[in-house]
Image 1 (spheres, rainbow, N blue to C red):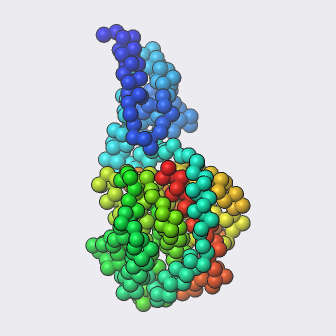
Image 2: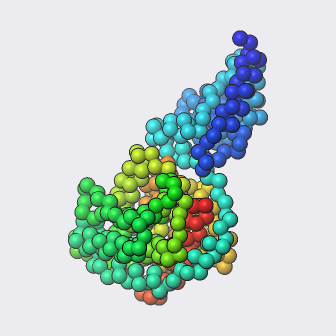
Image 3: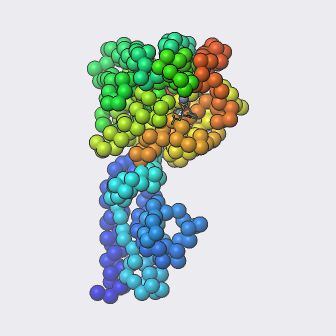
Length: 400
Ligand code: BES
Ligand code: ZN
C-alpha cells in the first residue's frame, strides 16, 4: 500500500477514535490525541522546550497532540524520515493504564483533567451560610484534650473511636450513610471513614489526618494536643459533614470523608487507602486534603500547596474562592516535599489538592510540640471556618 493511502486510512481511523465515548470526567480538547513516537521524530518536531511529554524515556515519548499537529508529524515522518506514520496512536484509557503499570502515576494524573464547572450557586450559598465557627472550635477542643493522638498510643486509638462515634451520631437518621473503621495491619490506630452513598460509585474524597505527634522520645506518652496539626482539619471536615447532612444533601457521587491514621510517621494510613483505591479501580473525581486550617499566619487567607498536588484542581479551587469567598485572598506556595496525605493520592494517580492555613514560612511554629493548642489561634476557629466553606463549595460543585 502507498503511504498516502495509509495516511488517509489512518485519518479516518483517528476520527472514529476521537469520536469514541470517553468516561465523562475525562476531557481533552476534543481533537487531541495521544501518540508515542521515537526520539528522532520527537526532537525534530517537538523540541523539549516547546512541548512537555506526558511520559518519556530514552527511546519513546508519549505526547498529546492536536489533529493538525498529527498531520504535520505524518508529513515530516514521510518526507524527512521516509516512514509511514512514524508514531503509534493511544487511547487515553490505555495510556493511563500503561503509566500506572509502569508506576508512572504522576504522568497519568497530568492528563486526567476534569471539566471543572461552577454553576451550583444557589445550593453552595445556602450551605456556606450554615457553617458555624463554634462547632469547629468545639471539635478542636475535644480532640486536643487527648494527651496525644499518636498512632501507637491508647489515646491515639481512643481519639479515633471518639470521632467514629461522633460521625455515627451525625448520620444516625440517614440510611445512605456508612461510618466505618479502616483497620491497618501494622499498628493499632484505625483510620475512620464516612461514606455518603451517591447515585454513582465514583468518589470524592475529603480527608485529613487524625493523629498527632510531639518530640522524639517516648512519643506514646508525650503531650501532643495537635490542635492545629491536625484537630483543625478534622474539625473542618466534621463541619462540612454537618452542614451537608443537616441540609439533607443527596450527592450524585459517593462522598468519602476520612480521618487518616498515622500520617505523622510517614503518611502511612493514607498510603494504604490510596493504594487500595487504585488497586480496586476506584474512580476518584478529586481528593481534598485538610491539614492545618486554623492558624492565620499570612496576609493570604488560603494558600494552595502547588507541589505533589493536581494543578487543574488547584485552579478550580482558586476559582471557587473567587466565586464564593471573594472577600478572601489566596495564592500558591510549595511544601517542598511530600508533606501530607495529598501526596499519597497523587502518587497513586488521583487528583489531590491541599488548601493550607498560611504560606509555608508563616505557618504555625508550635506544631509537633505540647504548645499546639487552640490558645495559639485566639481560642476560636475563625480561620478554619473559611476552609469549611471552601470544602462545601468544592464538594457541591465537583459533585454536579
Ligand atoms: N501538617 C504537617 C505538615 C504540613 C505542612 C502539611 C504544610 C501540609 C502543609 C504534617 O502533619 C507533617 O507534620 N508532615 C510531616 C511529613 C510527614 C511525611 C511525616 C512533616 O512535615 O515533617
Ligand atoms: Zn504534623
